[in-house]
Amino acid sequence: MGARRVGMLTVAMGLIAASAPAAADGLDFLDFAGSFGAAGGFHRYVPAVSNPLFNETPYITTELRALYLHNDIPDSFVTQGGSINAGALEARLALTDRLGFIAPKDGYVQLHFNKALADTNGFENVAVGLKYAVISNPAADEILTIGGLYEPPSGSLQTSGITLQGHGGGFFNPFISGAKAWGRFGIEGDVGLNIAADSNHDSSMVHYAGHLDYELVDGLYGLFEMNGFSVYQTGLRTNGNFEGVDLVNFGSLNAGTVITAAFGLRYRLNDHILLGAAYERPVTAREDIIASRVYIDLVLHY
Image 1: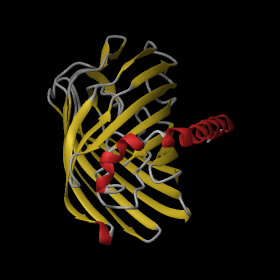
Image 2 (image 1 turned 90 degrees about the vertical axis):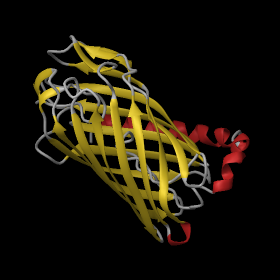
Image 3 (image 1 turned 45 degrees about the vertical axis):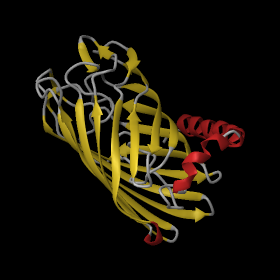
Image 4 (image 1 turned 90 degrees about the horizontal axis):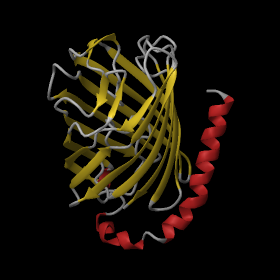
């Protein structure tokens, strides 16, 4: 991880931390959601930082999550490198202590390519859905949740005649996620399908994720996360040996599996504010669009 990226991460975290206490003072209007506790009656809530679209927390929360992602594109990619910058605001609403509304995908993306494709920017598709905790046991710190999302083709991202978001029939995403904690140690896992409604236009894949956290000191958690993306049905739109993993969909004729590992930190500023940062790299020979990633987020939750 280069010095420039470390500096960017440190400055951004400092700015977020400086502004967070002021934000906390104005959160009383959300007290209506506090009847379900910190997260559906649970008092230990350490959501994953990496893979924010597909690694859905099993906890039922009312929250806003602002996030920034910087993605370096590998030199081996058809564009011989480049970068992606994305900003988004995720939203979740606890309808009951077991049922939640979720909107984990939206945002604006800037794509820079060194060669082959034109630089572009635009909006991601918006995804919305529901999740339900089929097992919820705060006393034992364990929860198991099922859910589903629909992602209509609502975005506006394309480059050099290739549509990346906003066309086709959209996606259906059924998933299951769970978590368990023991004292200072916690684990979470998620597995699901991202199913293209128009299989001729877009690729479909299995996604899976694991998350480990350990409370190093009060309120500060060390994180280790792994994420996997395996295309099981390729699209018929782009003659390439790559896919867009979680950010975009090329509908490529040839695609495979990318697995990544991420290390990071979560800091609980108070009962309702979490800060997060993580660095991620592929651990498979196949990288597709990910050479490395930096994530920064701010979670305001009840």
